[in-house]
Length: 305
Image 1 (cartoon, rainbow, N blue to C red):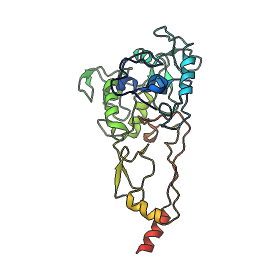
Image 2: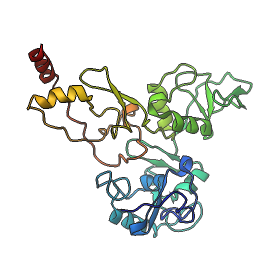
Image 3: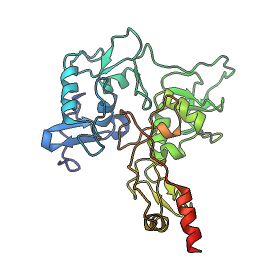
Image 4: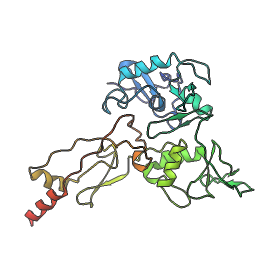
């Protein structure tokens, strides 16, 4: 399956939003499959309401099968975007009885919220989640703790407050850029360094937090060796990995059965482990990888002593 070379897809439009823009921070990676004459923005594909990942990661586009993409494009062609009034609106608000549909870029324009976790829900401007502050004692502007530009400390679509540090305020755009650069392992509150509570709230408010491909994964057996996720083709930092020395011991025992690779388990509770991996789509029921037997390694080491 051939993909376009860098720069080849500049003039090709996404089959969902019909935009030519190639802006990964806003729309996700723009990918072209020449074999099927198909170009998509990753986020346009991921957030579409009527499609699910049914293939393996290397099949189709991020595991979304080509025939499924075609069907979703056909379904969306009958829906009019409530923002631009053009057909092809593949994303719908998940609020009960709300019938609004829109393109991904149009949703961003109208300040819709897209949650890159769980069921990948989308909310229109009337039904999007908001931050509730019971009391606001700030009478003067406060600096965004990332860019240090002064802002009004009032929660809105573009202004967010830290859930763990009440005096920490951010521009949405500053948070999103930081999340993209830091990844799930390093993205945390700039004041107290909390990650769990902070990331859960930012995911709820539509901040996309990709997994960091250059995270160091330690050997699950000895813990003394490590590898980058990207270097060992690991899909998640929770996937099991053994260094060459430990793997040799396990393989030589003759009782080792290689575990299949799986992606992260699905969960209704938002946490570090269910954030989005940039190169894969979690719109698929998932299973956690089976753990290796530590007793096997221990017994083998004892036999060598």
